[in-house]
Length: 185
Image (cartoon, rainbow, N blue to C red):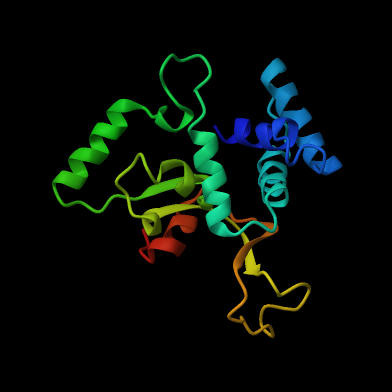
């Protein structure tokens, strides 16, 4: 879903496609090439995260998650009567239901941007949003501009918005999850 999400934003969204940067369009082209030839681009992990961050820069977190939810409500390609947001592996959904019913604490851990995961599952999974861990992007105050976050004072008129920068961390190790869970192997 995540690659389709970026392709939708950059190539199809009538409110954004004409504003997409050359970098975002290049990443979209690389994704389409990957779909055609099966060769995963070497820099895709970082480029994709960066393109997602820049393509949604300036939205409030709620606006971003609403956008994700709207995308998730679209029909799932190749399936009849299923939305993108419903296209979960059903045995895994049953495990989550079982764990919840038996008072286990369930976490969703993904390499995908946590705001995307949260927006995509908030109406489909019974997992609190603070138990969804994913990659990060910067967030900042709407009135902050170029002022350093250490010096900026959040005002009553400010909103929390996406900052447009992908925060790179090693998502393929346990250390990324340990940081959020504060439990170490």
